[in-house]
Image (cartoon, rainbow, N blue to C red; front, side, top):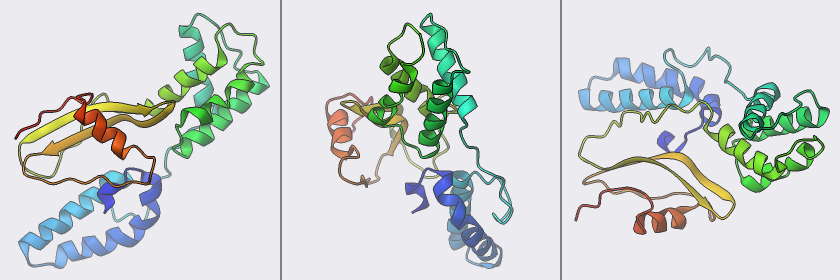
Length: 216
């Protein structure tokens, strides 16, 4: 089930309870096959929870976005457009703090970020504030991503698809630089609430919008 979760913020509270028990089982279990399954579970929890070693009892604090970091990102976007942003302006500082809250909540919905444009409109800058916020959300969503690096898949078999893509529906970003990896001979299912993009993803695959190899 941990593979369905991709956020360390979600997993961290459970690691001090799960990891010690799994590590104890791994060291005491005699069956090699069962021990291998437990080892994979430990590796998965450590990867998702960003815990390279240990039993999770002494976890370092998670990295969180800060307003100062976001305002610098916005200033870079303004600079690329040929304008200059007054980063000390109180409205810009406030908007950057709101943006940091959105990033920490993993909220990259464009309409939510569009609400920040009203604060940027107080600045005497040339670019359209809404366009700036839409570039801002994309930059904030992808910041810190590894350059196309795909983590090793524990399952064996021939790759049918191993690609990275983004998916949007109207103004809503459903998937951003998502990794899709499918193996021959495996069955996969999509889990998610209504409106999260399951049908949109399947249509994109059917229409060839997602580059993949289909083997009959």
